[in-house]
Amino acid sequence: MEKGMSYGSDYKYIPATSLKSGTGDEIRPDVYYHTIQIVNIALIGRPGSSFVLIDAGMPHSADTIISLTENRYGPDTRPDAIILTHGHFDHVGALIELVEHWDVPVYAHELELPYLTGKKSYPEPDMTVEGGMVAKMSPIFPIEPINLGDRVDRLPSDGTVPHLPGFRWIHTPGHSSGHVSFFRDSDGVLIAGDAFVTVKQEYLYRVFTQEKEISGPPRYLTPDWHAAWESVKKLEALKPAAAVTGHGIPIQGEELSQNLEKLARDFDKIAIPDYGKYLN
Ligand SMILES: [Zn+2]
Ligand SMILES: [Zn+2]
Image (cartoon, rainbow, N blue to C red):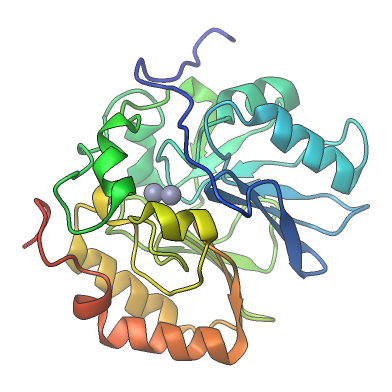
């Protein structure tokens, strides 16, 4: 591994998967998502043009991400940048191998940088939170920070997204302090990250089947529910037309607007767990 970059010592393969693993689709001609086991990555840019990778999948998924990228954009292509919604293990799992292979810059929100430069661990997952098997297995999830050294930069403070003209980043904290989502005003495309998801991520069976059901951020890793609710309200106010979420199947049109409105209104009933250590 290149000098100056390392994963945390608790980094490991996580044996969890879904029926959608290894599949993906275009929600716009230039917006493609792909499911790596239980998490989504997004490739923004039409085949034949430059592109950006959003998030970096599960641990040990670099070969998969490189080959699906080459399938879409051609052999030996590489993105202009890798841009992160946040630094949880399932969104940075292949990041070091990808940076080494492609030699491209990484961007994230300023408040997420301590978790990406080896300075700060995420709060421990809450296995006692209301939820199913994924919540119960969450103590095995890596929480020690990845260290990207000087290979990661903060997103520009003016809201623009490097290499993605037309998109702006929106600070959506709660699930993590430097969590961001990406929004394109021209056609309402939203890359939501884990600000909200379309599968009840705490429940192994639902994760496996990817049964579509709008939900707040994954409960076991969300320390600030008040901020998380505010973030969902912020995204709902944008009236997005289509959303790729960090977990679950993308959601569009009326199904999105109705469900997101309901989530923003009834977040306390739908998203906030009845019990768990990060309440109030
Ligand atoms: Zn997360
Ligand atoms: Zn996630």
